[in-house]
Image (cartoon, rainbow over all chains, first blue to last red):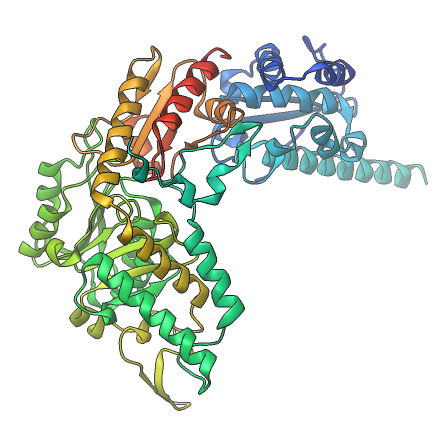
Length: 166
Length: 403
């Protein structure tokens, strides 16, 4: 599927309650019991901004086996702004963690970020495994794809500008 | 519970823990665990008589061939078939159905119909869709009622002179519905149609007798019946199998080959191209032995009692909704819980060591018919206990505190 990324010059509108990655890491370090961890993940999911119902269109669906995940991306001044949603609480929480790493970052930073490492550190790697079928792995794949596409577009633009200058 | 009915000690994997909790394995409709006897038989085969079958003139090959053919006889005996030639080894239920669909291609023509039901597993839908695309025949599905049973009026209305084949599940993998296959096979025959039964969810739980059922084909997998993965069987009436062309070409299935033409081997080898899954067959045969030596009537009564205990206790939890309410049910319960996605509860149950399946269970048309995107499915085997039911219920109640 090809998604068109909207390129906007205006700065990104502020993101409500975007979770700080360090705060997430810190919280996870305190959890001994799985109950605390999953309560926290579910709470993160509850704080995740809902996607506009209109955007929950089949075209924005990331195909996963079980829960549905929708993803929309816009470029704001070279940074990638994602809206991602799911119909499952735990997946929404995991989306919040992924967004803490990726939201409003330039494509190059997203591509460089070791998301598997983060999930391993948080002991959530099983949620990224191919067998989970919750769409999370497909979602990360899609984000990386978009980041690559955006980086390629940027490079092409730079080359065009350099060409004009010379 | 009488001690001799607790067979869980025969299954080494059941002793493990998951997420620091004792394993509660309720995903038996996906695959069952394996008893020591099966694991040991496979190991013994590789350690003592691994060889290719039906070919070499040496001792090991004789032993391997004898073991594989003995396994075929054991499968024949368990299904009540008349002749071992009627048992084709396949990779499993899916391949068994694909074999029939491929080999029946030339018998179907435009205007003919294949009748299935809305509750079929994808592996009893897609091969028929592909057959219909090849042959120009039409695929027709009998409706399923809100209770999760085949709508018998609709089935009979859709069964006609055009129907050349009826294919249906013995037990629904998603809901546990036990279908009245004997009557439906009879109805198919009355219209001159062949009948194939998908027995993937039935063989472990029911006494299957293919001659009493009078089905033309019966497909099942070893791995849902205490055997290894990667092997299963197709039963077919000998006269039909004789008429059908081979499914795949290769070694083993031939009698004589020239560059221009080939004469095929006799049954069952005509349908078994290439080196078969010999170790799998050995394990499969041992699983049949294991099943046959169990006090099956008592174990099945006990399994049925556990199923209904779980069902009634789930129904008592406010917010739990059982999906499907068939009069006859075998080994499977599908349900949903208010306030969360099936996937959420699957994850929270897993944290407590309770293994269930969540999702559409490879039965998307059925999910659509019932208006759900998926369910939580708990499925039982002969080794499950009352403690497993208790942990399922406690797990569900605890998971519900999270959402």
